[in-house]
Length: 137
Image 1 (cartoon, one colour):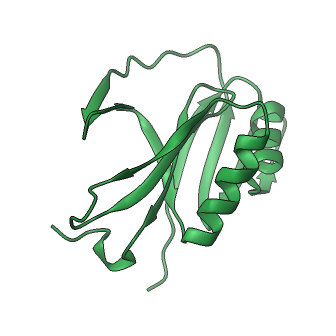
Image 2 (image 1 turned 180 degrees about the vertical axis):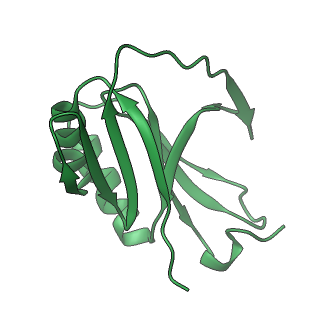
């Protein structure tokens, strides 16, 4: 069975959110109105709904000596796509958290970087060295 993930999140501006994901990430948009937009992020549906100012109290956590945001979402993609997106985003004046490799020489070794979207959500891009290790313990 081929499945995809859906998440719905509040946003401050449908237009700015749509532009960020299409122009910077290379995602596409789907159905939309003035108050919401569906974004196709590598086959996963992100729905952003215009809302009043909102706050998430999301503390950070430490993983392998790196401070990471506890509230974030992202995608796992292949290495070529990962490198292309990372290079593209680094060339723009965006808040990209530099790439890091986690779990070196361990199960689940992967490269990761984060970028903040216009709604202050942290979006993570992961590329696993061995794609079969995503859920291995």
